[in-house]
Length: 128
Image (cartoon, rainbow, N blue to C red):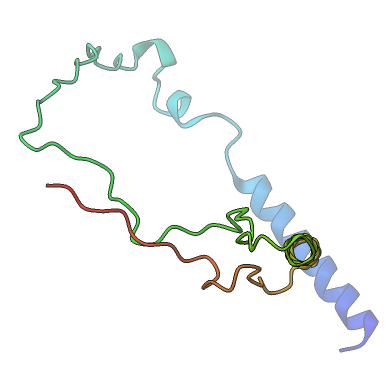
């Protein structure tokens, strides 16, 4: 469709909508039927009802999670008694923890520094 045809169709639609708007009555529907807004019925006044609190027959407690997710326990490596081995293990743990922090900041995958399953702990004991 060329620009002149679009312009003509747009002009015709604007003219038709202006004609239709002119045919609408300017007064409200109430005045056409001879009613004022004062004569309309008032809405019914209702008192707010107080909610009745019912005592529950059951004691609801939040469900305990089956798995607790945790990032690093801060476990220290086992002491061997040999100062050089203990110091080496401590340095390795600190290096691993720095790597974990960097990976978490970058959105990478979690690594375990203590050779455990990442993010898994034993579920809490269920007491009846």
